[in-house]
Length: 344
Image (cartoon, rainbow, N blue to C red; front, side, top):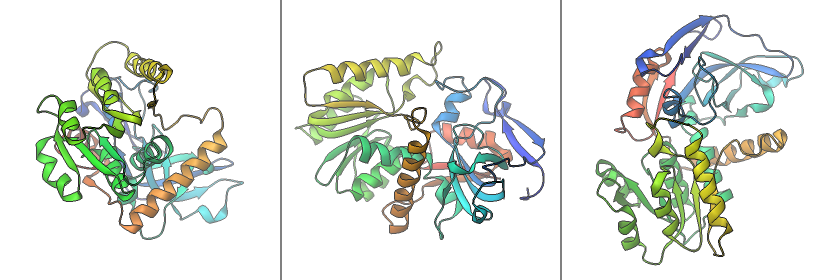
């Protein structure tokens, strides 16, 4: 694909196996006032797409649609009223859907410059994963040196960034992962716990008898209660997903609503612990400008951490956009560490 040719995008037509994804061709969009067209250099496979193909992501659009939660690319054309200097600039964007394409039309205010020296695939691994990890760690849990934290799924896309940012902040990290990832986690300075070995909570308590300062839980389901009980006084639970319900049937909203209800109930209790359900889009409806400002500031912090060597870009694999089905299968296999990146 070239930057000025046709539009190529991957379409999710319905609840299908990865091989049911379709490739669609069309004309490259033309930007209107305040808009830019980004030639995509890298997009990624996150847990959101894995849920969306099952119809399980709680606020996904109706089928068919183009998935792709985030992207990195170069501004190809810019519309009237935009900064003329944007054209030719490498940028990142958080889009929720639409990223699995060769070209994407965006509001210019929604793109974030990528610093010089950071490759497109490197930057892509840190857009939604980096923003999520940074905001949960620093804006919600406020982790600092001397804290002990638990990161569930420590080898995953968000989990691996959380681990690195927590270590950079001076925290002790206990990370749950399958045994195949334990040596790599130990090499980073993480205390690994095998989530498949049974009674994860007891294993964590053995490592931190007095409780922990923060737990980051993407699993949800019944295990969220164990995460809450691991907290020391003053500790914070940050729930940010319901991976345990990915293959369930029924309402896709109910697992999230149950988590929100639990969080509300726990915070209503007379105790010194806190709980949050984290959503990267929270606050956008109330103040789009504030949301954009915070996104830009926090992603800049993540990119700075990458340039300082505090965070590394964990690229599990790079595959062409037209092999999105294979990329999705690989991401869903649970056998890789880091993020599977699609390169148009």
